[in-house]
Amino acid sequence: MDGMEVKLTAEPWRDNVDRDMSLAEHLTELRSCLVKAGAALVAGTAVSFYYQEQIIEALTAPVGQLYYLRPAEAFMIYMKIALLAGLILASPMVLYQLYSFVRPALTLREKHYALCTIPIIIVLFLGGMLFSYYFVFPRALDLISMESYLDFLIMLVVPFGFVFNIPVVLLLLAYLKLLPVHALGKYHKHVILAAFILAAFITPTPDIITQSLLALPMVVLYELSLVLCKLLLTS
Image (tube, rainbow, N blue to C red; front, side, top):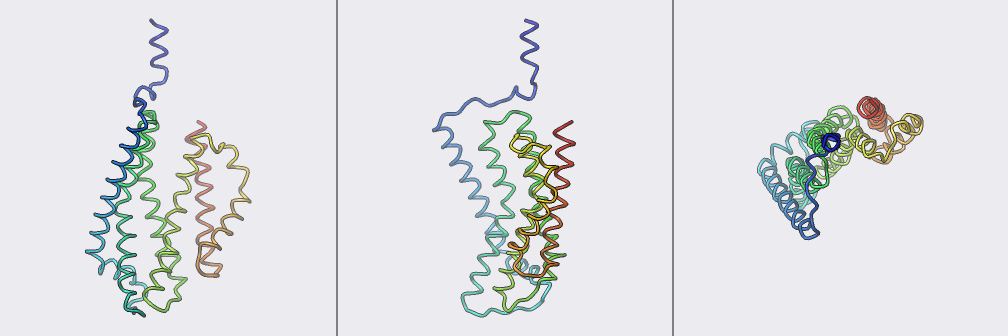
């Protein structure tokens, strides 16, 4: 009995794994998660559409008054902004529903990590967009109309939201043993080169300063990811 008790308590993080689910139960759970995520997106889009004027006023603050070239342009701009802002507002619920779907396959420790990761992803994504809006975007303004301005802004700002989640992605890959921690430290020069190549494709202007403002955060975040992986996963 003593040996059995030791075996049962040897992995305390694995004592809360949900039972296996059938295919039908998985499909039912997936449908439920998609419906809830879709409802959150619709609600977020509706709220964003209601505050459309305030959102556009905030987005166009760096340049002031802009104009529409075509009658349909205003409608398309309103829909783009409403959907994008709605997705940002709904992102906590969307990410939580993604977590809810994969939760039955996770151990208690993995559930804890996943729940902690959701707010981190959102904060980093918003932080990346704010960084681009305040520090990168003002250097790259060259616009002719409301549509071109907002398309340009979205194209430049949104990628920064994804770039700022590099530490989360690398930590997850290292935790899942898909990317060995020791391998991260071997590719500093490759990462720097890849960051500038990627920045050249992502940024819509050939300005080297704008490209550097995207590439340098990628390099810094990679180095930060390396430090975090060594601290959290090799201790």
